[in-house]
Length: 166
Image 1 (cartoon, rainbow, N blue to C red):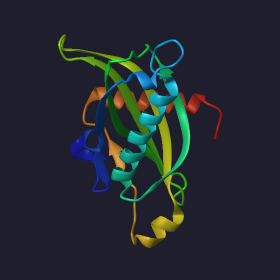
Image 2: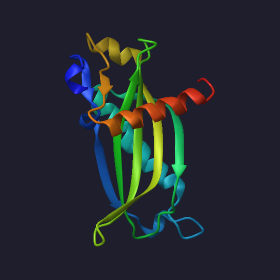
Image 3: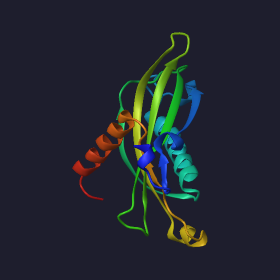
Image 4: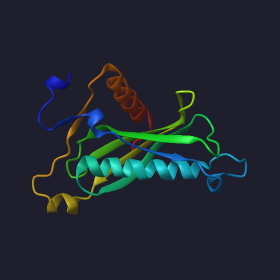
């Protein structure tokens, strides 16, 4: 599939960013687990950075599309956040949409294991005034390089289509 892509396309894997942290006691909730708002904040920061690096312009946050809390995160856990631009939407050229996925993994290096704790989906755009300052600005189309990447994109697009319109 990547060989068929046009010049304005980028492979999904080339949009990836990630960061890691050790969860600290000051980030815990009343139950002693890591506060979900802290996880969302860190996921948002990475999603914003991903959209920024992808577009080449400061992104404009539009919405949190969906958040899954799949398993609790404990104090002391080694947490890895991995992000990518899943797809872009160009229905309205004046407001292109950049859909970013962030997946949080609780990682145990000593066991060589990793388990997904959270998934986050964010939508960004680019401010029209920022686009006007960058002559010839265009958002690239994201293309999958593997069947798994294609499946992730299609599942998210299907989920988006089932939600009430924006």
